[in-house]
Amino acid sequence: MNDTYTAIEKDFDSHGWKAQVSVTYENGKITKVIYEELDKNGKKKSEDTQYNSQMKAQSGTSMVEAAKKLADSFLANNNDPNKVDTVTGATETTAKFKTLVQAAMAMRK
Picture 1 (tube, helix red, strand yellow):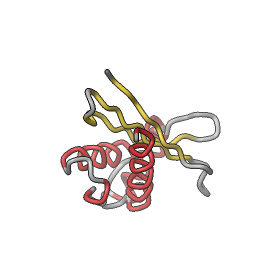
Picture 2 (cartoon, one colour; picture 1 turned 90 degrees about the vertical axis):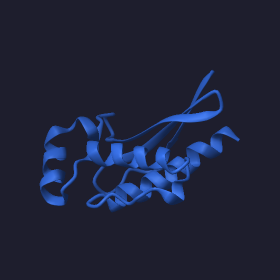
Picture 3 (cartoon, rainbow, N blue to C red; picture 1 turned 135 degrees about the vertical axis):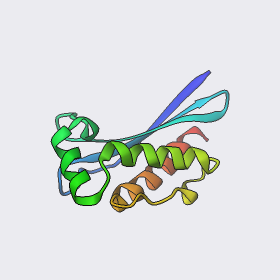
């Protein structure tokens, strides 16, 4: 049986984005984690090619790459948010990910 829990930031940030993390369990084990940010219209930051290009040019990573690295690090570190590696160029995103993944996991208990 699959169960997915999604934690969403309460407010939009100063740039108009709101982060969310979805954690999927299969047979009691976390098998999938998705980090995304959405604007007020529901547009996904990961699908904003202009934003991702600018982020990559400025910080060396894109939103898509950062989200994948965070999810991979979380799963590789036995689902421990405290052991998630900070993604260079995405420090704020990393902090949001850690907070939200903990909140999503707490929903299951």
